[in-house]
Image (cartoon, rainbow, N blue to C red; front, side, top):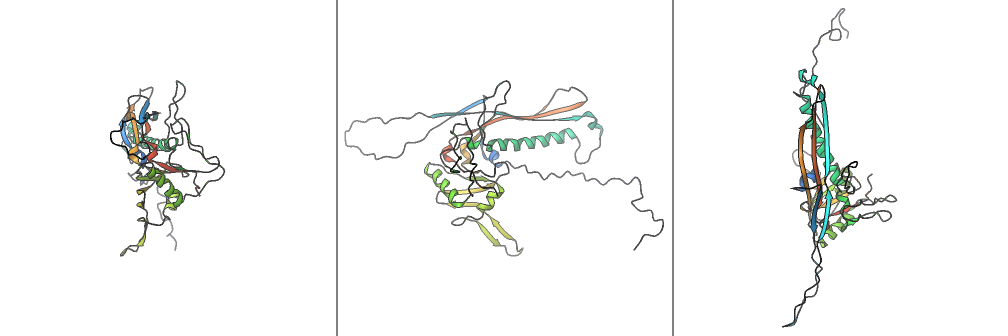
Length: 318
């Protein structure tokens, strides 16, 4: 087949209007499960402090009639702290934008400000999961909060060579295993769950990467993992909504912001995000023919009692 001679087709035409959708599609993830599930409280200082305590171990307790009472040894509470971290993002848009007719948004400054606010929330989630020690900060050094790995010491499973727990007060990070990583397994997971239970914890959420989630889908035993063909639509459904163990029932929640080598087993109400400055969208002073806005949040992470949580660390990631 061929065009008739002198056909004036669309390739020859000039002035065809563009066909540009008025919808902007963004596939980037926005979920922040750990940040969302943590308890929220307010802070009144850049140094946020809290106390933890624990009951003594059980012991034989029987006395004769009329015996004098002697007080047992009392232990002081532990006083811990973390530093608030400033999360800040900004955008600058030339004022020429006000006169432009754009697809997908009325004002570029509003669209870009909303975008950086979402990006900042992801930064916060990453900081909460980071293997990072707290930094007091100074006139030339930014304050930094200690992430979850820096607090976990009571219930951990990690590499046998360099792998080591942090001190547990946020002053140092975990030591990562570098010689031999270990595959995440049901046995390692159940061992940490048992340790948490023995220490009095009741974890409810496991945060893990997509790779480790696929490993967890292979766990067997008394759980509600499902792999079945649904009648009617012939779909194969394979999911792991909750995992039932003798030490409690726990939900598996894939997370994009924690390192794939780390699997966190958390009692969410034992973690608190203390906010000194809630997220705020601020217009900056004008210094030229442009509009500037910044989004700022200042907060920290409080490990209310790390013994109620645990982690399986130094896992293979491929």
